[in-house]
Amino acid sequence: MPTPDHHFLDVLPHEAPVSDYDHATALWQRAQSILVVCRPTETIDSLAAALCLRQLAQHTDQHLTIVSLAPIPREQQFLPQSDDIRTKLAEGRELIIRVATSQAELDRIKYTVDDGFVHIHLTPKEGQFLDHNTEVLTSIDQYDLIITLDCQSPADMGPLYTQHTDLWAQTPILNLSANPKNQDYGTTNLIEPHYSTTCEVVWEWLKHMQRPKNLSPTSLSLLLTGVISHTGRFLEPHTTAHALNTAAQLQALGAQHTEIIDHLYKQKSLPTLKLWGAILSRLQFDPVLRCAWSSVRLNDLTPAGLSLGNITDELLRHIDGADVVVLFREGQTEHTIEVRASGRAHLFHALTASTPHKRVARHHGVDLIIPDGSFDHVQAAFLQSLQSFMQHRLQLDSSITLSPISVQLPPAHSTPLAPVMAAFSAVTAPAQGSSTPSAPASVPFQTITQESRA
Image (tube, rainbow, N blue to C red):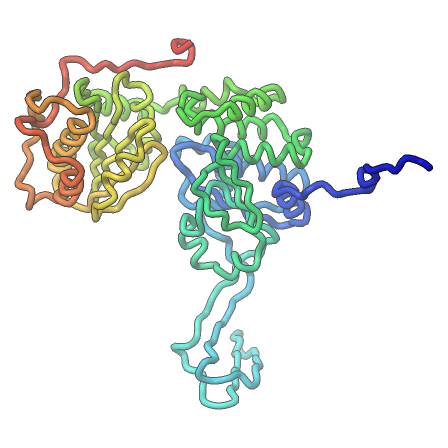
């Protein structure tokens, strides 16, 4: 008798498991009209990824619209086709009249055209339709697929989501992000928390679709721009080996590394350089408390619309010995305190969580929006609180005496920063015998390049 084959199942056909990348590819291939939603940040990551997908869609004769959740900053407008990005959905051709039927059920509807007007007649079975139960709406373009880039939840999309819930409910959603806090709200989710950037997620998806051969050097450069920008030229602590491998692959296929560095870090307009000069001239550094701070006045922001970009992150990266960098920005009706802490951003998120003022999460820290009050008093209050926190954190001897800053702090009850000060005091009480730090004789500002690090 023949020996029985105990491995006969090996010859039977079996299907490979279908991955999320397979689902994403199927959604893309079926779609003819695609909406991409991106979230501008201090870096160009999601914006560059969106523009790369648009160039791919042009190659495959698909219609792709990009909507940004905020205006594109001036320093990011060098990206190709960035001027075509919208900040809201385009209105369609249809006018929609919505009438509530909770009080009266519809029986008949008809319309007449008379003297250049359209008259729409609604007849109820009982009761009557009232004008306060009627809305006139404008339709929006319809899409086969929505792709979200670096949007961690529907709440991140604000009115774009809340004002068009029907569109989101009826359209497949492809959610791409490298953020571990993403809420997996999409029909299909490509979430890679071990990646550094969203551009890496897009690149892996394009390789899965076998699309790299369809990408032009411009498209490849867009992805590399996102990776370089979001990793701070690969110097940020969150930079992974996958980011370095992605950059190498993109350059090998034709991405222009030199041009990207020129646009991101070397080419600055004269007004921008003057603004940086004003900030650096006011830069102060305390080597004991390991914190630095500067300020921007209203008269510095000329011409109108001049953007600060991510200067606070640049200062944090380049000031040797600074754990914390603070930039105070004066405004007409409100002031902003930008707090950045490399690798320690969670401390300052927790520190400001109990304040009643608006908090805006940033890549390395948080922005506090102060609605009113003297700009000088805002600076003084925050620096006193920051000093107390850093003394506690670094376990400094309370006998250390520091020179006070030039701005005198008003009584706590008269400053709009009193709630902020209370939040800081809840974390740690001020050290006895201490005062507010001031600038040393010289500022140890060092420009660190990749070459010097090597």
